[in-house]
Length: 493
Image 1 (cartoon, one colour):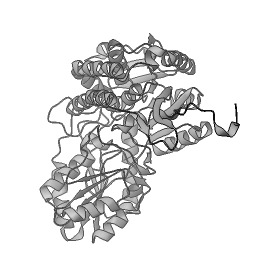
Image 2: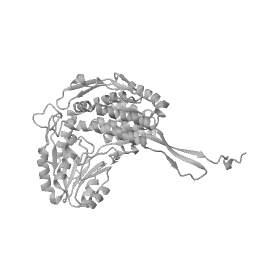
Image 3: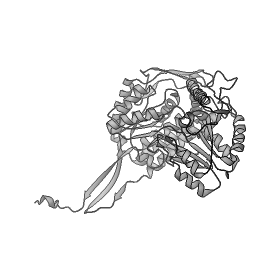
Image 4: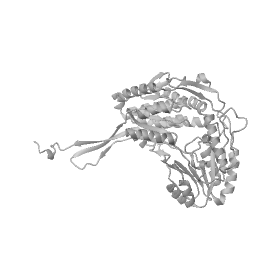
């Protein structure tokens, strides 16, 4: 696939394909720096047009009043379109982000599954008759918020797009999608599929552009009723402050510094495979990456030696090659920031057990070797801050109480992995670790039916699951009098 085969660079603004008026965006292939597409991003005027068109489309009774099963039919058609174009989506996303083709193919399938699950959940999402305490009928009903801004990250765009857009549309809203400037092309391809599925014009816009311009507009505009954001914690805090001024609900899925824990009784082969996948898949560019590995002291030396050997055997290379396990990072600038954090860790006394540099022979790309660091305490900078790259810190622990204390001694609380054959202990530790998701004897397994989100600096709110639709709706109580009599307080007639 060459540049001419990519999305043509026009933006999807309120159901119309138009040239953007914002700053220029250049998408390159991270493996060799070759050009994918140069386009003009969304400017403020583009965002304002998108909002105006979204307001009209969302207020139209043909959409706002559409029955759930009819709206679900559109979501199923979007899923069909994603599946029919899965190879093209995967190829574009690999070119745009550098992820392996195997992973981007799985992400396209995940996106289709998200729309199918959301359609099914929508058809069975009932409102409730509540218990009355007088001579009246009471109901709890849910209605659309109106306009939802969805701001997605560059690391898994098609899956993130689906995870935010599907429930917001299911709830009856219009969606203003802002993909990251480093990976704008998949979202534009997604817009083409949504348009072909018959979603009424205006209900989806795709607006790649600078956060300080288009992002701020979407957050601050009075017509936007909710922001769903996945990205860095510092940006999330800023969005939360802006939303607080509007008293607007937000969903923030932010950073992570997730602990993975290997007890002495664990199946060590299972644990090594899980640790490798948990931190080095996606080249470590994952908010849930298990970047702090705690190994019980009595097996620490043997386990770490085996883990280093397995890490050095990982295949680093072209993301389009089937054997590749570790692909380039999204951008050379990001690769350089990861390298700088490793260099800082060295200066603080870290021992580099493997990796710690860019691989030879792949200088044209944004590559960095899978890296394992030892000799640091849990208070070291690289054990506190999110790296968002293929870097693992290994630390010993003594017992259950020790690892719970160390695991929780971090500002993030997104995910955790536990390897042990002792189920009661796994349960105790899973409940004691402050985090949104815990995996036991596995890692990075997901279900769209299972809620996802973080604690502490990892964010607020939950996505996925049946309640993911409700999170994009306003709850209303309705009372219907059954007595037929004037209220006695009025004493009339």
